[in-house]
Length: 424
Image (tube, rainbow, N blue to C red; front, side, top):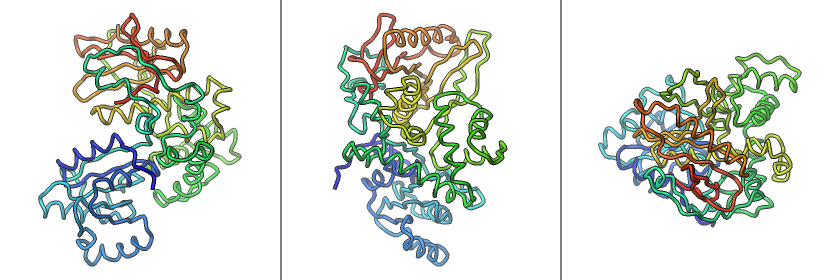
């Protein structure tokens, strides 16, 4: 049996269980939700097993409490296939009056409100899991901590263990836990298998709506061509129509996108809206992202050599990888990730904003002195127009790079951090 790799979600799950009767872990399939939950669970109900589901569907009508019997925390895996169990769990939590009773996992968002009576407010805590960051999968040496940078600590130059070729492979492999444990020559298959499963099965099953597999694949490919960019739906629609002989209206496009969001395949990055001392209008469009960069690469049928041969496209996919890792780290830092863009053309690839009001400004570059300088200049310019009378100054500014020998701090105060050195 493969050894369990520690996840950042482990500590989050343990903490949240101490304060609530149940914790719901959501995220894409194959990202490790069930395996992580099993580290703390004392009993297990697998609703992903068709026989167990059939029996449970009968019991939920006759004796719902029977399904919930067992040592606690009791894990209910893929709970959303039996929505009625939500209300049974909620009632059981009220009866027991104790925390740490249940862990629920699901690969799609909560069912419609009509399928459950209660929201679970006050009884359920939520955790969003994603595929592994490079630190969790063991590729990053973790020598630079975002938490330390938020605390005002500096860094001495430290070595980066990863080359550009390494990053190209890791972008294509993705953070799927199983793929991190098998031979490199077969690890790339995981992302292709994931895409096949999404377009041929999951997008039909997520809400019972019949959808066209070819159209779903075209959408994934179009999203991949617009990855890390603020492409409007009209651009995606036009790109799809160039390859789709059927008509495609915007309502249909939005339906497919929403289905992929329910499956946690697509996870766009929303805009940050700070107080600024500028007449520039802040753009509010999302930037397009997958939950893992390997999805987009696989949708286009690309491999590591293809990325190395097209550095412009590689740059966009690398940004998608960095956004994935930063989102994983943000969960541990009690924060959320955003991007910034205004009418003057000033952009910031990522803003990690914590609940306590502190934030970091981050640019993403493949590497190279010219690109690093450009990223640092953007960050300094953005910091200069933030109205610090109404909000704090950034805790730090950083350019995250794919290739570079060292992590270090520039004379202007901006950190340069290879992704192979980063952790929460």
